Image (cartoon, rainbow, N blue to C red; front, side):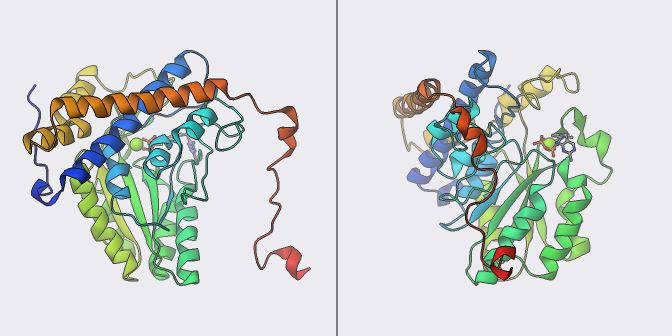
Length: 344
Ligand SMILES: Cc1ncc(C[n+]2csc(CCOP(=O)(O)OP(=O)(O)O)c2C)c(N)n1
Ligand SMILES: [Mg+2]
């Protein structure tokens, strides 16, 4: 089947060679990392839940391209791509997936529970939509501190039917919080398609009732996502309050590692892979613009494979956490300013 012509919705002529190569590299890292995680899961090296992001890479890579140092991000359980895109170390992520000491949560959190203060990544949340009010809280902190940071708060189409999302919209708009609500609309919530769960399908439009502007974006086109991200970021940084981006995307793999896949046809998945794949799209732009040769791209592929293989080796060699780790990281050692203890 013919792939869509390279070009997408954003003008590729505005995009430099270095940018295109960066997006290619960043999306490929996520895809290869996740493929490796899938293999390790199959080998029994990853326990618990594992939700792969394969197919959705352009969403997070496009939005990270619109972010600056200090901006925050928070997401659901489908979180490995977000971590890699904001610069977290693949070794630490893979070691956490395999429950090892070298992982971001010392092997005690697993796939859905990783954080990085350094990269302003606030998880990794297993309760559907629970991260949405938390994201508004992060944005509230930045507004209170008077800086111009924004918070990217990611959630799914399924999550967008939860009540707490709308309570959050109301408060975020009321207080002009610098938060971008990113709805990753991959058209399914576990085995339930949007068609079966939701009558009004323009999810971005639901902000209108609260006075929040929003738009729908092609999430298989990294340049379109970046352009929309820049617009949303400018709105937030200017103090105009929240913004909603509904990013239309697709996950190629199951909801999690155990998914009977009875709710959609193989042909549907294959059609997306063949015609809309975001990595192939950037690859076409690079080759058509003569920014790099097939051999240059092969060299990048090899480099990425090495990073991913090294992360798997690191994970396998890292020991399991010692038993006394059971008693650490339960309560905070340092209480935040203004806490109960200070006022006792
Ligand atoms: C409050 C709550 N209800 C139900 C679940 C079970 N559950 C986990 S993921 C999921 C589907 C969410 O779909 P969506 O928001 O579209 O995100 P996606 O998995 O597509 O990324 C459900 C119902 C949960 N984890 N938390
Ligand atoms: Mg979904």
